[in-house]
Amino acid sequence: MPPAGDSRLRAQREAVYRAIESHRRRPVWQALQAGALACSVLLAVLLYRPAPPPQESGVAQAISDQQLFNDLAEMINRDTPAAAEPLMALFVAEEPQESQQP
Picture 1 (cartoon, rainbow, N blue to C red):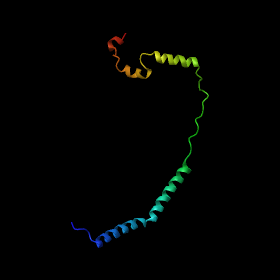
Picture 2 (picture 1 turned 180 degrees about the horizontal axis):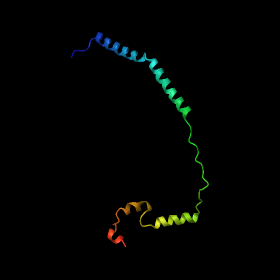
Picture 3 (picture 1 turned 135 degrees about the vertical axis):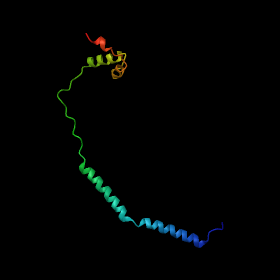
Picture 4 (picture 1 turned 30 degrees about the vertical axis):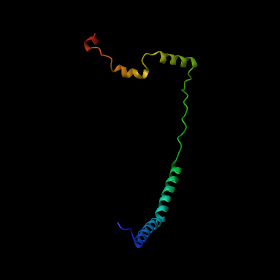
């Protein structure tokens, strides 16, 4: 291909500059976006209400160190964890109905 002429390169450059300038001429759209963002932030600040602190009930039980130790020892000494017991119950064979009747 033959090299492009100076007039063609100049025309391309001017087209690029016009395209850049056309994007810069939209301050109204940018102001509208900034205003919408500011309104949404203001609305969020006005509507924000922190959750109320949890109310303490008078039923709270104090667990002694000995009771905690006993519970932990019981959990450690179990063959099957307490969370797995419902799952293990699915695999237990049921007794036939005939033997259940007196």
